[in-house]
Amino acid sequence: MISPDLPAELKVALDAKLQGFSRTEAASRAATISRTYRDGGGSGTIKSETDALAYALARMPATYAAVAANLNALIEIKPDFAPTSLLDIGAGPGTASWAAAEAFPSLQRFVLLDANATLRALALGLAGMRLRDARYELGPARKLLADAAPADLVIASYMVGEVDEAERTALAGLMWEKTRETLVIVEPGTPAGYARTIALRAQLIAAGAHVAAPCPHDEECPLEAPDWCHFSQRLSRSRAHMQVKGAEVPFEDERFAYVALTRAPVTSHPSRVLAQPVVGKAEVTAKLCTPDGLSIAKIPRRAKANYARARRWRWGDAVSDA
Image 1 (cartoon, rainbow, N blue to C red):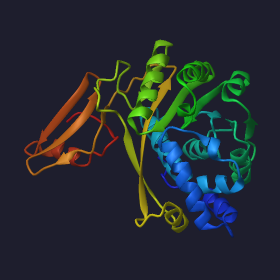
Image 2 (tube, helix red, strand yellow; image 1 turned 120 degrees about the horizontal axis):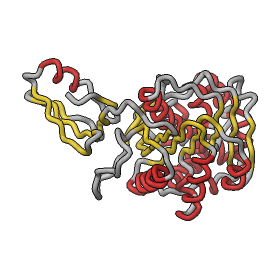
Image 3 (cartoon, rainbow, N blue to C red; image 1 turned 90 degrees about the vertical axis):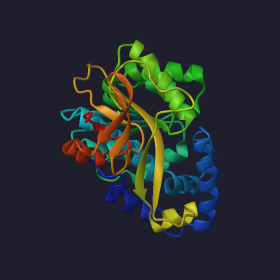
Image 4 (cartoon, one colour; image 1 turned 180 degrees about the vertical axis):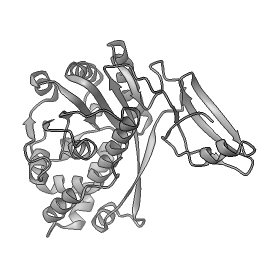
């Protein structure tokens, strides 16, 4: 399992870029960029090196943490998965590629796709030894994807919300076409981000995909509005990160929605904890998505072993029903 915090090599490279960088100017730009991403917008507001560095400070740590959490969930379900090639769609500054490199030492070929030249320049400046041989293609996602070679692992993080529904449908089909083994889609943990994720999930299951995580089944999502499936990953904030975000606490909780889809059916189907369990003196109450649908599990204290195990459950965990 990998840490939710940026790798040391990436931190050093980013710190070097930030020498002499105005935190006041960065804070202003970062606030605008963060609002855009929360609202489902994209990287169109990032046009200068200042914008790119502000984005890296404000969003890169949280994006990395979310992708890391998704890949950890995937590894838990598919511990033998050892991809050698990665296709990173909407790569931005290379955040998902860094996370994948940490999660899978087996990766040898990295191909990154994005339309933003400023973020591409930043990604190449941060590449380091692990991503030194990565190829970064610049242009529209659908065209680049159509021309790309298939990869064992395909990741689209925080990018499908940047295009309209018709384009998302076309992109999803192409992403699946280019996936040899596993496709991971990550979106903001908002109702809109969940809606996009669940729509693509349904589309790709119809095309023959199987869900590895977070769902323990390939059936329709059992949740009903206004509820939605999302998760949270806590990450630490650097001093610069706190300054740019105007934050007073040294951590952040990134909310995200995701789905990991595989070519082969998944044999392990543990339940998924959909909210932080409530631990009481008499019982633990947990909201679970199970292979049979939604369940509210109540594990009584008198069932000592099961109660002790359930006390350790956390939001997002894959668990065996007690």
